Amino acid sequence: MAFFLPFSGCVKTGRNMGKSRRRVKNISALYMLPSVIGVALFFVLPFLVVIYYSLIDNPIAGNFVFLDNFISLLQNKAFKMAAANSLKFSFTAVPLAVVLSLLVAFLLDKTIPGKSRIRTAFLSPMMVPIASVILIWQVLFHYNGLVNEWLMRLGVERIDWLKSEYAPVVVVILFILKNLGYNMILFMAALANIPKEVVEVAELESATKWQIFWHLKVRYLSSSILFVTILSLINSFKVFREVYLLTGDYPYESLYMLQHYMNNMFRSLDYQKLSAAAIIMSLFMIVLIGILFFAENVVGKDLDG
Image (cartoon, rainbow, N blue to C red; front, side):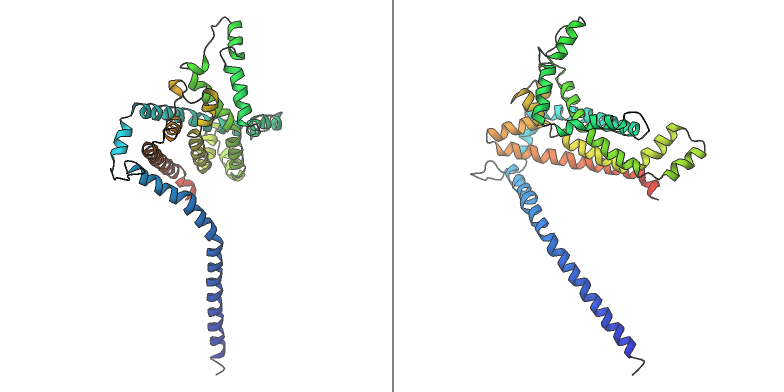
């Protein structure tokens, strides 16, 4: 019997450990339950309702029309103009915001005079309410604003910035200044996590600053660049607030974004086109983010190895 006592004790210990693990899993599941319920109620269920509305003729009759709403939407001139403007804005503003914030982060990663003041200057737009920023922008870019006053002193004619082909430029500058500080902080945090030993080895191997920047630091920052790009892309599709405060319901054609179209459909109670537009926008975002993840995996896979 003496030979079996230790074994039986091990069996009991194993059973107790198994019970404690199951208890921990059950407790973890209970902690996650409120989050799961919240996501289901406020994200999954509304999205299912949107899919349902996009496939019927109207909420009252509820007749199933399959893809008719999507076909009608893709033939709508206002939607095509809004989609084209949104894509132009995103593919212009997002790369500029990411590249500029990355360059500023690299600059502030060095020892330069007034480093803290420069960092505070870039972060200050984040602390200012958007209504105040729009007020400043209106003072600057109004037809009788400060920018035109400066141009007239240089002998240049006034430009109606918000009602001309220059209107997207104004919004792109506003978007970059609004997002530059936050993106910069994310990049600076990622730069601080790059192993100094790797950089020192590269310097000992006579690598140039450009080689260290492009082949080493940028590759180590690939995950951060992906995250910042996705974040900036999402923010670019939320620029409606700024444009609406600047120009109202119906801005200049080049500023008529998808959010304007969807807002007008909501106000006219055209839930079918609104739902179809939301689904197309979601599918586009999913595909684009998937491409970005694939690109990041290709760039950063050798570092993971």
